[in-house]
Amino acid sequence: MAYRNGTYIAFHAEGKTNPTASDIRYYHMLKAWHKNDGFDFKFVNSHEKASAVRDSSTKATIMRSLRLRLDNSKNMVLIVGSTTKNDTDFVPYEIAYAIDTCGIPLIVAYTGYTSILNPEALRPLWPKALADRIDNGSAKAIHIPFNQKAIDTAIGQFNLTTSPKGGGLGYYTAEAQRSFGINV
Image 1 (cartoon, rainbow, N blue to C red):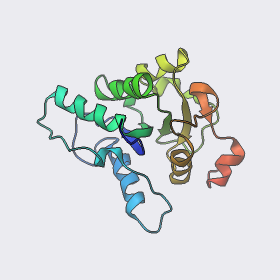
Image 2: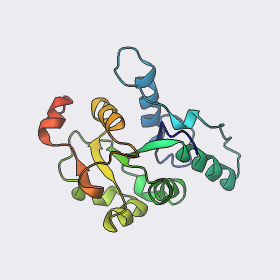
Image 3: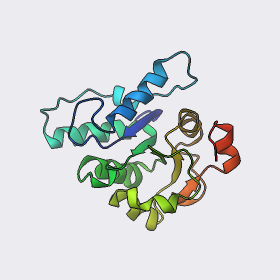
Image 4: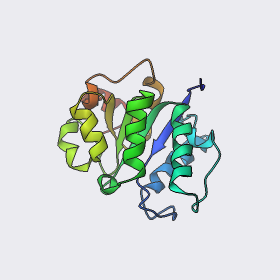
């Protein structure tokens, strides 16, 4: 059995490798927060626990690598932007495998939002794989804005043994969000 201490990060790259052309920029921001001594933000990046794949790798090779990374994870940060729902291959696969096989909680971090108090209102942004699992009750998720303190707190709080309250529609209270420096 794998040692499951990593945080898996999922995002819609839109088939691009340019670090500013898609939601990959938010993944890079998480890594920058982690490396910056001025931020209290540390996590074990599951993507760094397995061999890298090349852009020319086959889909089967990429999916095998994603499974290995998820198998070594205690939670998953799903970065949701305006195009995430359009992803038809890797993000839906990552969501399905994380929930259905690994049983790990999701930390759904929305770009472009400063506060999340009604996750159901964000349903139009969800990939079908997420909506289906929230609807059938199999998802354990907390919905938060893409905010360093909120993400850091959720990574430290939710894992294989501690899931967000609210099933698939968990969120932090207004008071908790204010403690992260979020104006609610």
